[in-house]
Length: 475
Image 1 (cartoon, rainbow, N blue to C red):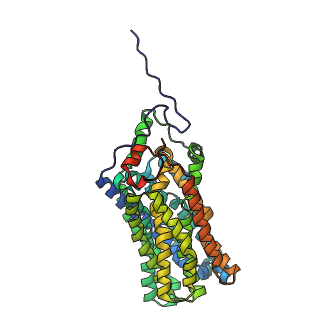
Image 2: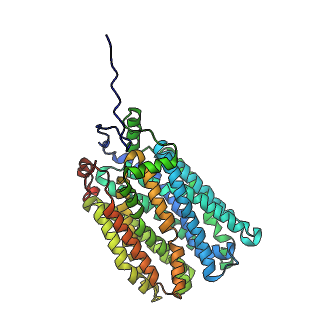
Image 3: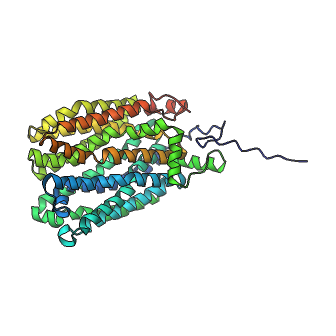
């Protein structure tokens, strides 16, 4: 009497067993799991953008005179925003390396690692002596810390988008996924509020000397809290299903080499990877132009005082965070694709009036203009892309694909945006109209990405997920 062992189905180029129902999604996560993941992942994103927001605020206020004293005026601002861009240059490296690890180890452990890297780097920036004390070591070490911070951040926001999307109950996928971006603004709000309070409480000399360091040092406390929350954060159900499929031979093992992992994600659908690269362009460029570049523009070109520019920033952040969640709810009604169109059109329509109204120098008018462009050009696109981006990649290589495409976009397009905007304004002798063109072009890139993408979603997912309305089924 003999027995035979069933042959293992062949693995396809995308890493799935031929003829196996690996595209059937696990049951919709319960509300309790969605909420727990939102709290833990969201708080970590608060810390990331608290830390990144800190540098964005001080970039146009104190970094140039403290760390680049020999570069004055526009040259000093260019050097400052160059270090801002350096952080984004490191993000895709972190995204590639940590994205591969997230597909291999899980979303949760990589998010724990990212928060440690970001928190330590930010705290050390708060302790870094200025150029007057240690000379050229000051800007050199600042660059190193920005690189480390950027490496960790390469997995933070993209990782939060991934785990929140995978852990969200399907009927509210747009709303829960939007918390990743809204939490990021909450971190920026926290950093802006602290800077506003500190700058109003101490003299200008005291602020430039030591006051600006206090929020950086508080990052250590926030990092500890974030670690405690993420230690008990559950893994995403979709990744657990991937692990189960790997055990059963239905999905290929995760790639150890990060470049091979990214190559696999690109090979699975080159057009989807390109779409993932282009899709966040409009919201990212508009956000960084309005926030990081906007502070220095309002101060140096329009002539607003520091408390006024911080107030404008705070209004943009609060409005953006709240409206982002509203657009997430709207995505659960009309579909994320339509919400993305709203963001693209909003960015194009409001770009010229935004700078035109800034030029009036009227403080209330500037606040309204800033809030409007941020609410439409940033919030709508942000909420929508947290649903659309993960759908471009299958769960077993999703982190490698999403992290690399999104973070390379940040390095090549979004990160340099304040630097490019500063150079464009300088080229026109203080006029901002080329920056208007920069915003419009970035939104057009998002439109191309939206049209180009072919998400990997089944008809059953679309039927159960209102936020996927308008997306064509593809197994």
